[in-house]
Structure formats: structure tokens, C-alpha cells
Length: 210
Image (cartoon, rainbow, N blue to C red):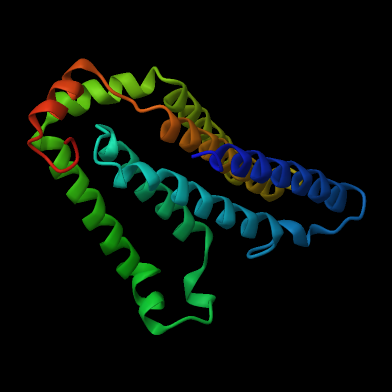
């Protein structure tokens, strides 16, 4: 656990440096390649998302936690973002990854994963509603909401037409993933629970709330 905070600070420092360097490249050097596909901004987004996945996945293997399904959802969400940012079809990887990491194969796997989580949540709907309410009001939840707001701003930049709008889209997305990494570190270090969730933990009817 002690390594998580330094990891987050290191990644955030890299993000800040890359954003400043990219801004200099675009507005001073007139080098617009920094926001091209598979260039530094998108590559750093992908690496940040891998860090997000690595952090969120830790509590899933801690049997005493009652918020493991919540962590699993964020792992799924980060994988979704990662596969959106990385063009797997262009990578020199095994055909298996081309089939299941892009297109209909990717959509099928993500859909199955989401459906499984929904089924698990429906088994104890009241428990997870309570857990969700606790999460939204927690520091980890509010930080994750901020990340979502930044992603919406990035999406808006993509849809609007103004000078270097794609640059701002990529920058806001990169900041959002950095904020999401912060949210992950907060959730890992501070378990989210409610009274109902604690009761379920004592009953232990499900593998995700023992």
C-alpha cells in the first residue's frame, strides 16, 4: 500500500510535464503531431489507465472488503477506456488480441463483464445501493466524479470546432485519467462501506461481500 501514493504522485508529475511540453510544442514550435493518434498524449493516457487498473484491482483480492464489486466495476471501466484509447488492430500482437481487443470481440467481452457485475449487484440490490450512496459521498467517489466531468469536457472539445480542439480533448482526457488514478488510490486505502453493506459482510452470502 505504501507504494501507491508515490506512484500516483509520480504519474501526476509526468502528466503535468507532458502537458506543458505538449502545449509548448503546439503553440511555440508549431508541432501538432503531439496530439496525433498513438503519439505522446494518447500513449501516456494508455499508461495511466494501466496504472488505474493495477491500483483498482488490489482490493478485489482482499476478502475482508465489502466494496470489491465496486472496485471490479472501476477495473472494467478503466479497461473500457484503455481499449478505446489503444488501437489494438494496429499493434503487432497475436491474432487473439486483435480478435478480442477490438471490434465486436471487444464489445462482447465488455458486455459479458458488465452483465456479470449487474447480476451480482441485483443479488443484493439494497446492499449495493447503500454502498453506492456511501461511495458518492466519499473522497474517492467525489474524485471519480471529477474525473468523469473532465472526460465530458474532453468529449465536448472533440465535438466543437475551434483551433486545436483535438489537443484540448486529449489534454482533458489525460488529466481525467490522472484524477481517476487519484480516486483509485483513495478507494484502495479507504474502504467504502455502509451499515447495510457491513451487515451483508457478516452474513457472507456472496463472494464479493464476505
